[in-house]
Length: 45
Image (cartoon, rainbow, N blue to C red; front, side):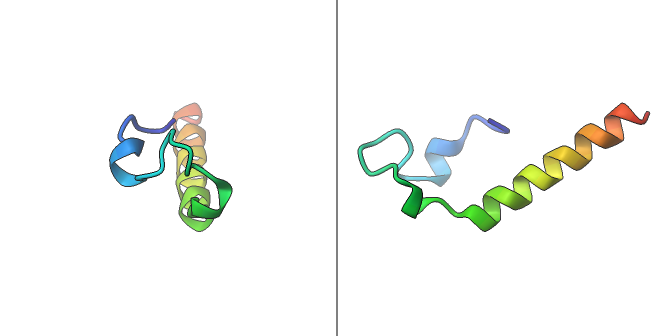
């Protein structure tokens, strides 16, 4: 988890309706890419 606020942004979080069809994969990919860039930047400092 990047943050601890998923339950506020994703109403299906940890409910029976929490299914792959409800996930915003484009947004998830952008967050993952951004987090990877931060890790690389920090590793290069």
